[in-house]
Image 1 (cartoon, one colour):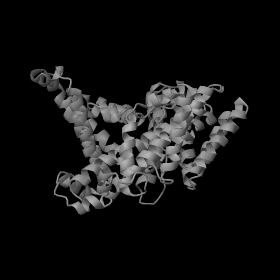
Image 2: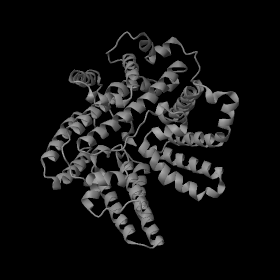
Image 3: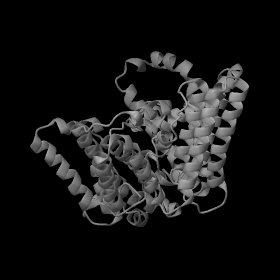
Image 4: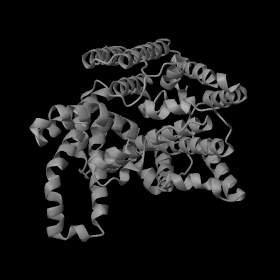
Length: 467
């Protein structure tokens, strides 16, 4: 069941009404049943089974870890629990098959973080199985995150619910804003990005360049839109989930990008992969940190799938961060000698450079294979592309803007680019509409809904759904 589907539009209000009018002691049971029903709606019986198995392993191992004082024994139970969870994920993800894996990575990462946090003493082991099962399965964050830590989500699930009109209204607005990003902007950017990347050898130069920009914006608005829909849904039920994005394309470095992009995942790989590796390799100095970065982002790439493009994407980000590590001691000195530290243009240049560095890596992430990615990189600035290739890519219609609301690729890109500028406005400003006078509020609500119904292209898939 996708957030942008009609079935979810029916599912959510029904679940909320049942939740709202149920006695407080049974409300978490309502959410747990709804979460498993939500997952079962994907019509892949092995997915709820995998979720339940991972939940049982994490719950049982967490209790054992908490009950044992001997460090060696605690480590054995931690190793057993983490190995079992990761093995299930790896078996489903990398054994050749056509299995639908929606959500498996996210609840596995959540189980691993819980076990590690219990072993470190950062959180107490949860003794109520139903409470823990809801922590693992809460449906708004189940399919694509955010990856929630036990210390932030478990206490919220234990709070007594009370109706909060502002929270429900804010949640509905945030969900609508996320839906707008997905169906109006991301899906229309996809028209051009897919037209180019599904046949990269048919293009060179400007179509490839615009296609790469289109994909960079598409993947951001697609995933950011999903996250806002998840956060909005959680807020309706009185649960505040972790924000996953903070204007990542405004980052001034690749490290800053990862502090802003898929934040819950970035923190997860930092705390449970990079930092433990860095500690083990601390005797190697900066070389150890470099190796830890390379391994961490290599594994990050492999998590996205068994494809060389994902591996290349992960290694590139690891190398970008490692290069910055070696450059950092020289950075202030260089900026000072050139007078850049006082320049008002420095931040703008850093943002420009970081954005294009990230876009370069997106090429390998999006391309169907390494030959396609190499073709894009080597032909990206070959502006000898003939008019026919530009027309076939839909760029001619995009530049002319002849049709605004048609279904063609050019019309889609025209609309998407116009709306992209609107989306440069901070989300906080959109949410602040709630505090405006009623004509402004309702005009904004109706404008968002009108755009969604008029411009949606159907029940399209989320990009991170398959990861």
